[in-house]
Image (cartoon, rainbow, N blue to C red):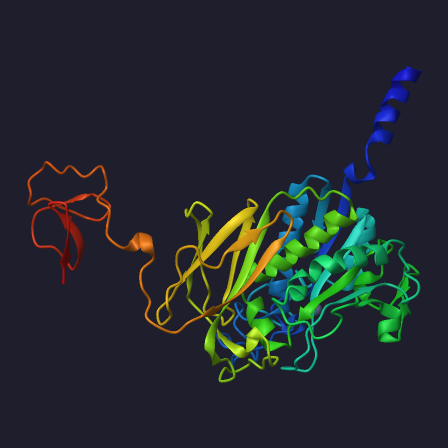
Amino acid sequence: MKTHILFILSILLALPAAAQNKRVYLNPGHGSWGPDDRPLPTIPYPMLSTTGRPDTCGFYESNTNLWKALECGVRLKKNGHFTVKFSRVKNGPYPYRKGASNEFRYNRSLSEISAEVDTWGADMFLSIHSNAASEGSLINYPLFLYRGYDSQESAAGSKAMAQAIWPRLTEAMHAGFEVMTYYKTSTNIRGDIDFYHSSWTNDRGITGYLGVLHHLTPGFLSEGYFHTYQPARHRALNQDWCRQEGIRYYRGIIDYFGVNDEKLGCIMGQLHDRIQKSSSLEYFNACPDTPDEYMPANGVLVRLKNSDGEVVSTYVTDQNYNGIFVFNDLEPGRYFIEMKADGYVTRKGRVNSTTVKADATAYKTIEMFRGNSTPFDDEVGIEIPASTPREESSDAVYDLSGRRLPDGPLPRGIYIRNGKRVIIE
Ligand SMILES: [Zn+2]
């Protein structure tokens, strides 16, 4: 019996600390589509006269925080070394009504959340937010706040977590993909008591400033970027852009716990007009000498090709003035990015060469040239499907998928008759 226990013990001791299950509590900030959700106008979603807030598809920090946290949490669960708890997984209710009994269903009280973090027995806490300065200001950088003083953290391990995650969260900014106006060569990791010059003590005797950090679990609150920097706010309307931030938190967390075994990578790009400036746009005050000064390209069909020239994925940029496209979970290697949109010269073939590395996102800022759009190479000429029975009556008409059409007049369209393309105008 004794040897048996010793044997098990020796196995347990041989396992690296990282292999043990870690409990991560994720708090996507805010959560009701109400005035506490930092609603702000964007071009497609201005403030409505009825509510003074945008449509729920517009910018609410609560939407964006949730997308980031969900992506981070889903990947942590998939990694296999983590148990994850979210303070909420939804937004709402809709419509928001002040004083309604369900007003705080998802926008939960911070004291309730902070108590739950400890009760659940979290090993790490992360609260996900974005920051605000005065509306339209040209400021954009992250801020991490842990409970305590700059020189002394209150929950041991908080600073080390923040320091591990900072380089991953700032990857997009350091790549020049997003504007970073300060802290390019340093970090912005602060104790909340020093940052706000204030503190208070809760009913559990825990002292700090931010309500959501009033627990004993190490971790921090992240203000990932400034949503008052208007071009960034338009990017945040794109869920995939937000989810990329979630992936960067995920990378930092698996780095910190020593369980990074990522074998796939991502591409995130943004498309801008080469000439036309964005200065005519409303709610779009852009930093000078950055890509944000140029008109983002909406509705562009983007095709990702592998090194063999095969199309592996497609993406259409949204209508929200960000030009963002994202391809996730790609095998490392060389890829090409084709683009086509009305009013722009089509880019096709072995263009925009991009190298994907494991555990990384390749960031691409691409200029679009005004001109005539042309089809992609494989759209020129129409292949007749092999299944088309060519020996049938020469009058037989097929659609482009090779399906025989009934005899009679044809509506406008492109057909195949006798092995040739027929256009009915
Ligand atoms: Zn916030």
